[in-house]
Image 1 (cartoon, one colour):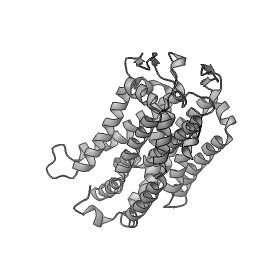
Image 2 (cartoon, rainbow, N blue to C red):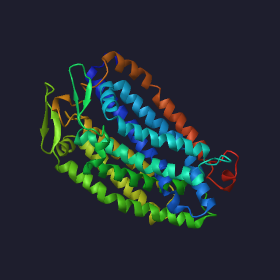
Image 3 (cartoon, helix red, strand yellow):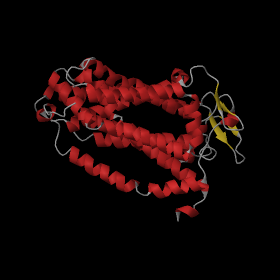
Image 4 (cartoon, rainbow, N blue to C red):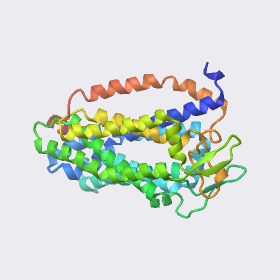
Amino acid sequence: MIGNLDITILQQLWWIIAAIVGSLFLFLNFVQGGQTLLWQVAKSDIEKALVINSLGRKWELTFTTLVLFGGALFAAFPKFYATSFGGAYWVWILILFTFIIQAVSYEFRKKPGNLLGEKTYELFLFINGSVGILLIGAAVGTFFTGSNFTLNQFNQVSWTHPLMGLEAAFSLFNLSLGLFLVFNARVIGSMYLLNNIELSTVPDLEQRLRRACLTNLVCALPFLLYVLASLLLMNGYSFDESGIVTIVSGKYLENLLAMPIVLGLLLVGLVLVVWGVISTSFLGGFKAIWFGGLGTVLVGLAVFFIAGFNNTPFYPSKVDLQSSLTIYNASSSHYTLTAMSYVALVIPFVLAYIVYVWKLMDSKKIGHDDINDSKAY
């Protein structure tokens, strides 16, 4: 029974659940990636309408998954939620703001007589897909580079940098991770649009999407290589049996070697993304989104597991090592984790429903009839 599980097992279980939700969010960033491709690949009003209406059917899934990820962290690891959102609030406010203007854009872009005009809302979509994802990548990067916070004996957070979280975007590692996520979102965004739009009447759009898929992988590679090289060479954070945190040389390389399954997830994920691009750009495939999407999920899982397992603080403090957060000192009580685990048993049924609805939504590709519909975005 779940209630008889040791609290350590529950803490690890909920880090895995949070990692799965966060990785699914990275996959669903194909919406944001597609938004940033709009002006690059759509050269006519018809092409623009096809792209926006294709993405418009899925944009709520990304936002909902982001909220679910935040909710899971709040319930399972409340000390992290309080520390990050209580101290680095500017970065999170900006991230949420980019998702708010995304929602507003899909709702009002085609409203008759709107004051801002279509191009302004399209600019909002671009900001959500670029700035929003960049800042999310920078925030995730702090799992490895650390943040500027201290906690007192009452767990009250004090942030020691005046930018209150935005300083994360000025770290080369964090910035590189953020830019990689932006370009990867554009890669899987192009794959999704190829799979979802009826392209027989707009062959030029198909060619541009295939070209964009390859171009954005090439743009992503330098940032990916820098992130991987840094993970293998950089100092990391570790804690011992008594919970004392220290800086360890080559910690994240040690994690990969100590957890070969995680190393396998990382390598297989990268191969799947590259294969998706090859299938799209050179073999004329239309289903590559499932290779690129699965690859993105596997890479995301590897990143979360490297950051949180093998005695690694997942939210280290650069200014006070002993304030660093681990999945053990930041978690909820045994009672809360147990109750949440029972609720989590319904997750497979929810996922099955999402797959069913997704299949219904994509049973017919987006065509001219959809962009002329009264409910078109």
